[in-house]
Image 1 (tube, rainbow, N blue to C red):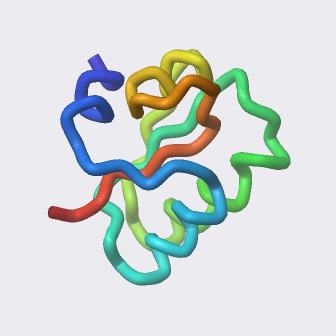
Image 2 (cartoon, rainbow, N blue to C red):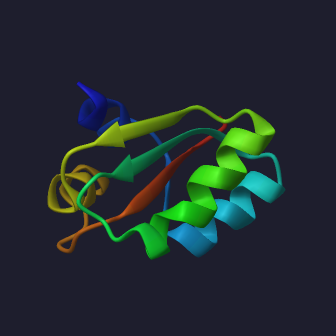
Length: 82
């Protein structure tokens, strides 16, 4: 399951931080919650597709945040290049 990959990886949480990391070339995958608002996620999705970073859609902000070890939802999470 996708959440397991998030749980087992070094993560970058949030749209701004994920976009910044993608600009630096340090992201290998981007996870986006389907229940997040489009205005929060669109920039990250568009940029990821432009530079060839795979975008994985998951059902829940709450579960994505939980997989990252935080107690709030996460709309966008990037997996860092190791």
